[in-house]
Length: 458
Image (tube, rainbow, N blue to C red; front, side, top):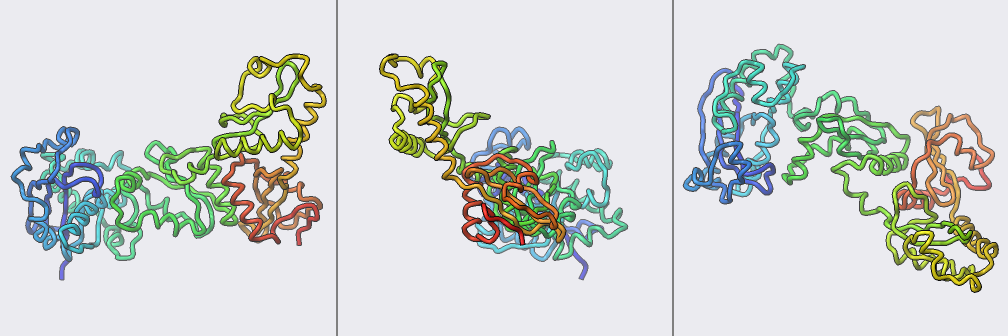
C-alpha cells in the first residue's frame, strides 16, 4: 500500500497545548505527488483570542464565535490523521496541540511524524533561515495568507513535495524509520550535536540561538540522558519553550557521576541558565563574617551573603547563624558587644562603647581568633581518589577545612605521601552547601576512597 501523508497546520490562542486552544486547522492528504483531499475550518477555542495572536493571524473572536468546537470535529480529524504520517513545519508544535485536544475529546492518537524544518535542513543544508516564510522566499515557493492555517498548509505541501523530489540520498526515508531518534529532536537542533554525544558520565550544555547556555545537566550516560529530554508528550508551556530554544549541545566527559554532579553545580552557579531551577533553592542566604574596626577590635557578624565577599561559614537561615555565633561567644567568652547581627559600618561598630569598659584588645582578638580557629578545625580536610576517564588516570577531589577546594585528574602512576598534595593537581572551584552535602554523603558511603592524614594510594 502506498504511503500517505497528512500535512497539517494550525493556528492557536497561544504557544503551549496545555493552556491554549486551536482556532483554525487545515489538513491536506497527500501521497507525495498529488493532493488527495483537504479539510479546513475555523475552530471555536471556547476562550478569548489574545490581541497579539489576532495581530499575527487576523483571526478575531467574532470569526470563531459560530465556528465548530474542536469536540465537534474531533472524529473527522482523527479519521483524516489515523494511519498516515503526520507532516508539519515544526511538527512537535502542531502534533502536541492536536494530540492533546483529541485526547480531551476521547480519542487516543499517536502517529509517525515528519518535520519539514528538520527535513529541509537535511536535504537543503546551509540556508540562512528555515522558518516557513523565509524558506518560501529562498526556494521560490508561493505563499498566500501567511499565518493562516490554509495558506501555511498549502506552502508546506509544496515544500514537502519538492523535498521528496530533491532527496536523492533518502534522508526523508531514514527520518521516517520508527526507531529514528531524529524524529524526537527539537526542530532547531542540528542532529550532529546529538550524534556526537558519548555514552559516558559527564555534563551537557544546551544553547539558544545566540549561543547562550540555557540549561546545564549531568548524566551517567550523556546520550541517554539528553535523549530523555526529548521523549514523552508533556505539553506544558515551559517544556515547549525549552525545546524551541535548543539550537546546540556541547558536553564535557567526567570520570564519575560525582565529578559530573560537582561540575554541574559549579557551572549552574557560574552561568545561571534560565531553565535551571532545581539547585537555586539550595543557596545559602547568610554568612558569618569577621572584620576589624579602626580601633583594632575584631568583630564577628552574621549577615546576608554578599557577592565576592569571603565569609567563615554559610547558613540557610539567619537563625542558624545567630545560634552558632551565640554558641561561640559563650564558649570563648567574647564580649557580646562585638557580636553583630548584620554588618554595621566601622563607625556604627565602635559607637557607644566607653573606653574604660572595653576588654583588652589583644586578649579580645585572641578569643575571637580562637573561636574562628576552632570552627575551622572542626571541619575536615580530605581527598577523594577515584577512577579516571581512562585507565591511565585517576580523578581527584580536595576538600579543605570543610570547603570544596577543587577537582581534577592525575596520571595513574602518581603517588602521594600526604593528602594535601592532591591540591597541586586540581582546578579550584567555589564551594557551597549543596556541594558539601554531596561530598560528605559520598565520603560516608565510600570511605575507602577518602584519604586523610594516614594516606596512601594502592
